[in-house]
Amino acid sequence: MIVCHCNVLTVEDIQGAVDELLTEMPLRVITPGLVYRRLGTRGRCCGCFPLAIDVINAHIEKRLATDDLAERRQQIVEQQRAYRANMPQRRRMAADA
Ligand code: FES
Image (cartoon, rainbow, N blue to C red; front, top):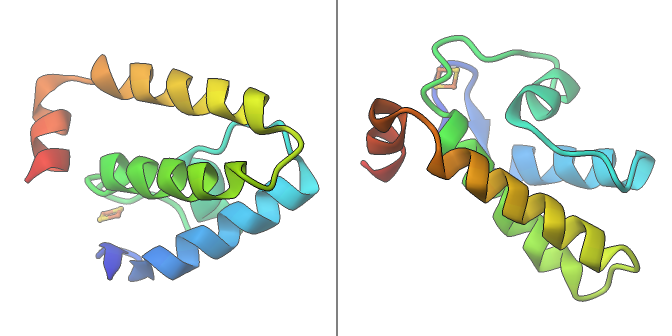
């Protein structure tokens, strides 16, 4: 499934970048901007960022079961969810569409 139409990034592209980033820096907060830079691009319209955050969080949660740093990562996921809940209404609507 394509997440970012501007850069033609798929769920698998994002998950692969998240895996690389977490391997290099396990405690780093993974943001869409960080993932896109890893993939050699950047946000253009950034309309995909809410969905990208969901994909990133879902992938991190999937990894939690086998991760030594599970508790810290869970805190990060909760911080990102709180950030998303406080996003402007129009961005949340785009993410839910
Ligand atoms: S849809 Fe991803 S930057 Fe525009």
